Image 1: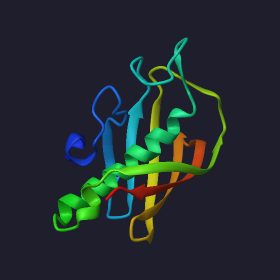
Image 2: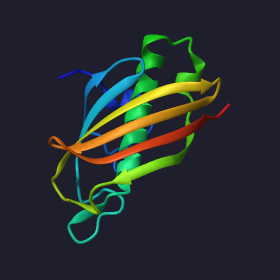
Image 3: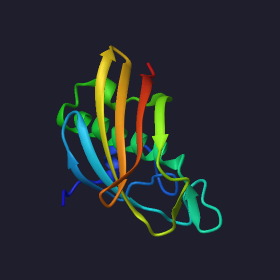
Image 4: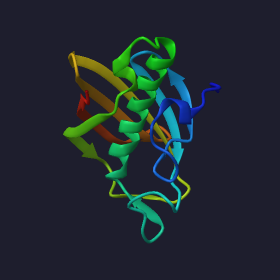
Length: 140
């Protein structure tokens, strides 16, 4: 287990911060763990809608940016927020029951100076439940 303060790395705060733990991180990739809680957005009737996985990938990517800012405080881009859009997303399920542990892997690539592409894979155990590509523009 890594001893990283998630609140230092990502801008989201509870209840909107969904990730509970960062288990691996580099300058381009991160793996996080989250457990579906009643306070999560989209939760109804004991389950979260699968679309919330997009936010998990975005928050995992935000951890990469925060990590990069911690490693190189002179990199101004790492501390700035992003406007994120969905380029592609596929889901294997419709809902995720409360208390389900989810593992999210994300990779970021800089395409242009303020434009990034984020690839994400989300699993429950060994089962892939979501795969997506997001695109983000960093604010000035």
